[in-house]
Amino acid sequence: MVFGIPLPNDEGVTTDLFDVAQGTVVTSSSPLFPGFDARSTFGYDSQAIEWSRTIFSDSPRATDFINFQTAQSINLAGYKLILGEDIGTAKRSATAIRLYAGGDVNNLQLVSSANIEQTYLAQYGSVQIGITDTLDLQNVQFFRLELDRTHLTGFGGPRVIELDGFGTVVPEPSSWILGLAGAIAVAVFGRNRRVSRPQRRS
Image (cartoon, rainbow, N blue to C red; front, side, top):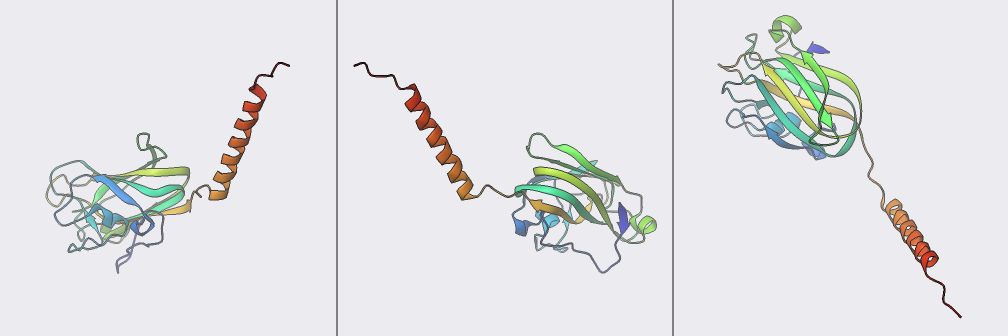
């Protein structure tokens, strides 16, 4: 779903699963406009002029991306992506977005996509838009966000305000479970050794 977000600006939340405050890290991205940081997509204060946004470089390219991972595996129930254009001009805007996810960094699958009409203001009533989707992804940790540019040059780098992820963290095995598993393994190993020991002759 794509919809307009009335001003004042919506900065998303800091308690979601994708926020840097929850341990999310950016592993790589396409080039950014000087002074901006891809981590601002996930709540980082970059100290840029637009401190809480990510703006991609104006160097010509068709698609921009951010690769990132959460601190541990999560069950992702949905997300909200917030984008912003320069007022009514379609500059800094995107025509489509795609989100990939997986439990293995080398095996990501497309899990959500959306096409975006232009301009944001004309089509959705605001220079800021939200994109949401409901998902049911289990045990994922690695992600890739892609944005197709509206303009390849001339303030073409899209503006990302926030990407929030919602769901639950996959609990790590507690220490007592690991200890119990170790004790069982030792007991089984010891029993097998006793069974296989040859009998002494009288």
